[in-house]
Length: 165
Image (cartoon, rainbow, N blue to C red; front, side, top):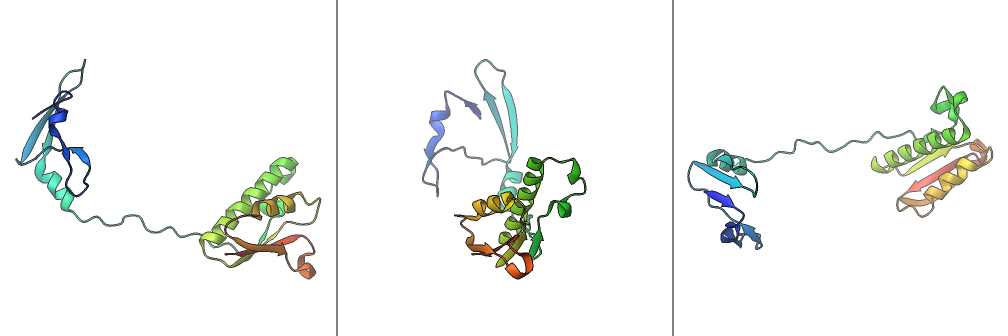
């Protein structure tokens, strides 16, 4: 069988089951040799073992990939920089904030993926920059039912409790 660009139109038909136009080639024998030639290139021969192709198509596929399991974070996550890294003294404020926000997002996504109902993030009082960023990311988030300052007796205004949908 020779497959050339000028003969492709001869093989264009409606594909069974798909009901779409496709290039159909019948593979009846045990081995089919296909010669493909593109313009300005040499001919390339491709040998197709039909029995292997049929076996591969009839073989039942098993799921090799197991469903992902997500690490369930603790109910209370401390975002104080001292808890996240040992070398925080060499970091500037922007780097510290970035690390804290990345940790927040990672733990929050893990909480959603693992099916937690609630999670509390301790961010401290300070200037309120981390608290504002956390609450900005939470407002309008599709998986957040509500969020509020958590247990004022225990954390003061330095923690945010999140109710996950």
